[in-house]
Length: 521
Ligand SMILES: Cc1cc2nc3c(=O)[nH]c(=O)nc-3n(C[C@H](O)[C@H](O)[C@H](O)COP(=O)(O)OP(=O)(O)OC[C@H]3O[C@@H](n4cnc5c(N)ncnc54)[C@H](O)[C@@H]3O)c2cc1C
Image 1 (cartoon, rainbow, N blue to C red):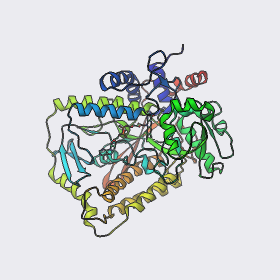
Image 2 (spheres, rainbow, N blue to C red):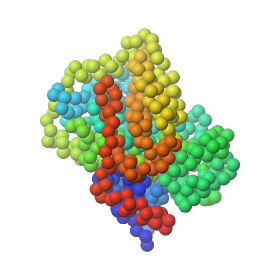
Image 3 (cartoon, rainbow, N blue to C red):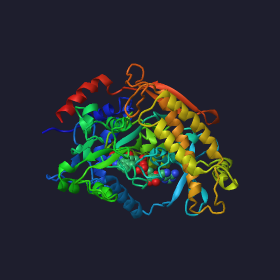
Image 4 (cartoon, rainbow, N blue to C red):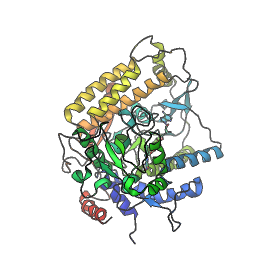
């Protein structure tokens, strides 16, 4: 019987990532995944679905040479978060509910990060937590695009905080679009995912003309091609005028049998039912949707970055997935590296002394965030947010080119100034002030968008999720490189490029053999 191995998982991850992954991070991801799954079951209380032989069932996600995704039906993340929350309650750990990180704090000698300044959303109070070690893990900011999958609370806060504190980022141009986001008009479900396991199980994609269009783009792997290819193919069909009336394509799982779909994808069936459709029995309109950021703060395998006292993990960190994340590797990353960050933080907290923060810096940050209350009039945050989402979708989305990216970069610089003069109309109420929180969202989104756009302008080739119609080829001679950036003078971006460190495998050692494996699948 065909068997999986760490090496196969590792090679799939590099191949999917267009070979610009940080290989040490990718290796740690795959090699520590089995023990993390074990720990999630025996220590945290997650119970993953079983195969008939009683072993953990593993399902197919795109780009895998072996069906390896461990899952709980089609809602694994919810199971993990719920059981983890139980563990936090059981240990009486102090939790600041509905509290939002605003910025990181530096020590008096400016040498290290010593905690964060936070706001209590319920009361509007801004307060400081002084810490020996600080972990940033706020998820990404795909909500910068007009159609996106994550919840709206993911507005790049962590990345923006790290940027303002001086952290170095890697490959920020790499944003993943999932091919199958639900079309749901102006409802909040618009862009939410129909998961990849559906295509892994054989669901098909059709354009508005009824053509199974993946035959045109990847006849070998069809709907099981990697996410970037499938998403771009959907987008190109829509752009070519072959989409549906609602600028979408169709996902059809009905031929798999209603019983199979209902039993294996209950969460997805339920989601589609919410918009009055029946996933098990009819085709459903879908569109590419911004989903995940591969780029983020550059870390080592202990989640440490260029700032002492700061650990970054999960989607806020970059490098593990290179140019494209494989399905299943997202939760894998947040659990493997979340666990790691916790262990490292515990070690450091025993070794380190508490360093005081700079009062004047904390006060400056507090006053900056309170500024929208002090202005009697100014820019409307909601208009700026709409503009960002459209700008990113049209000029820095699935298909990019130099001139659109340049336009986006200039406009984002202007929007950064505009958001600085945004004001809160209800200025006497800081409690649950959604307008104020939106100003914080948008400030952070623009900060991250600028990094995405500038890195995308810099990479003059196409690789993984980054597709440039003016440079449609992958250039392994010139661009087997990572793009780093951090804050320079006056909030400008400082970009540098470095060759990818190919310390475990060279590209040629994997590429051909990978396709053999997928063919046999
Ligand atoms: C719809 C959807 C389906 C997915 N399905 C899969 C899948 O099947 N398999 C897979 O491997 N991956 C999947 N992913 C990807 C996976 O969810 C992510 O890789 C993973 O959640 C990232 O983990 P994280 O810990 O970095 O961030 P998150 O899980 O996003 O957690 C970040 C947390 O930080 C909080 N936060 C944000 N800002 C602040 C702030 N300023 N202060 C305090 N807290 C803050 C957020 O509210 C959130 O609770 C999916 C993603 C989406 C959006």
